[in-house]
Image 1 (cartoon, helix red, strand yellow):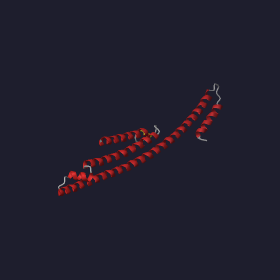
Image 2: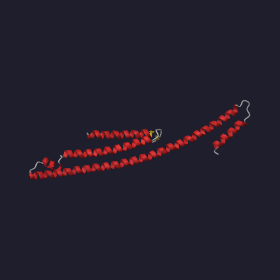
Image 3: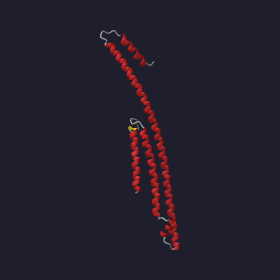
Image 4: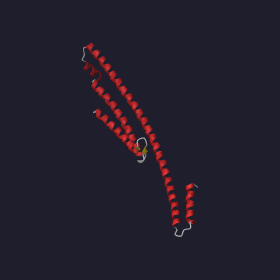
Length: 191
């Protein structure tokens, strides 16, 4: 039996044993026992709620860590794609220089030679490569945004994110909007 239970039991016995003519003292002591019992029940429930919320918070922290790791991987992949695009652009420039040299030897128009080789001109090729890189970046950003929105919808709205000073749900939704805005900006740049 806990100290609180012992105190409640003692107050109930005391409320019955007190000799008072009008019974006010008995009622006050009985009320005190009831109030302590009620507060003890509420405290136990609050402790359980805290444990549940803390468990949800830890789960959200794990998901946040996984999302950050995934974003890092996608960012590295994007960097790798951008490097590949730069390599292809450099190879394209070198090829154009070789075609130009060949054209000088054969008295052929360089534009005609490039069209024969690629069936599209260098400007269009560069635009296609750039479009591909931007689409991949948009795809990565929108994937992360969708994960943030999914995780935010699973979070209890009252769960506070200590480092951000607001609820984890509000913070996650803010971050998702930022990602959506960034993807939209990339789309506009692509046009």
